[in-house]
Amino acid sequence: MNRIAPASHKDHVGSWRRCYAIFITAFTALLLSPVTFAEPAMWVVRDADSTIYFIGTAHLLRHGMEWKSPKIDKALADSSELWLEVPDPENEAALLPLIQRYGMDNKKPLSQKLSAVQNEKLARAATEYSIPKENLEPMQPWLVGMMFSALPLQKAGYDPHAGVDLILQGEAKNKGEKILGFETMEEQVRFLAELPESDQIAFLDNTLDDVAEGIAKVEKLASAWVNGDNAAIADLLVTEVKAKTPVLYQKLIVDRNARWAEKIETILRSSGVQLIAVGAAHLVGPDSVQTQLAKRGIKVEPY
Image (cartoon, rainbow, N blue to C red; front, side, top):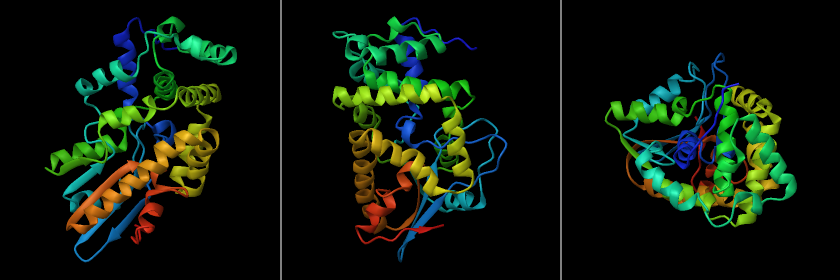
C-alpha cells in the first residue's frame, strides 16, 4: 500500500490542493476507465447570432483515457470563450490562504465534533491511508471530507491533472481562447466552509461510508457515463446527495445551477460561440442547468 503520512499543516494543505480539482466532485465528477472510449454528453443552445455548447465534465480521469470526440473538437475550435466552474482551478498561491482561513479550527478538535461511531469510522479510514488521526484534529469536517473523497480515487489511479476541464483549459490557452469562470476559488471553498457544522459532519460521515465502499461506486458511474445513461448518473450522484444531505444538495447543485443559468442567459444575449464545461451532475437531474434555463424560456437541446 502506498503510504500517505502527512506530518504537518503544509502537508494537509498539499493533500487538499491535489484534490481541489475535484472540489464538489464527491457529487459531480464522473470517473472513467482508461481502456474504454467514451463520448461525454453534450448539449447546445442557439439563437440568431449565438451558439453555446455544454459539456458535462469529469474532473478526474486516469491517464491514457481516450474521451475526445469530433463534437468536442468542433465546439472547442468554433468557440472564442471557454467557461469553467472556476477559471484557475490549480492556482495554489490563491488556494493556500483560503484553506488556512476556512479549513482549520484550532479551538475545538475534530474528534470533539464527532460521535463515537463517526470517530471510529474516521480512525479506520485514517489507518487505511496511513494518516495519523491526530493530524486531522485541527481540520474542519468539510475539509477532512474532501480529503477522504480524493484519497481512494487517487489510490485507484485517478488524477485531477487528467481531468476534462483542465485539458480543455490547456487547449483553449493554446489557441488563445478567453477562459472565464462562473465562480471564484474562494466562493467554491466557502460553499462547504460556511455550511452549518451539522451539515459538514453529515458530509464527512457520508464520505467515510463511500470510502468503506471502495471503488465500486466509481465503476458504476464510469459505466453510466460510457453508455450515455444520464438517468443513471443522476440517480447515482444527484438523487443520492439530495436524499442524504438536502442542505448540501440545495447549496451545491440547485442554487449554483440557478445562478449559472442567469449568467448563461446574459451570455446568450451577446454574439459568438461559447463552450461551457462544468461538472456533469450539473447537467442531469430535476434541477439541472437546462431545467433552470427552461424556466427562463431558453431551450437547450442534445448536441
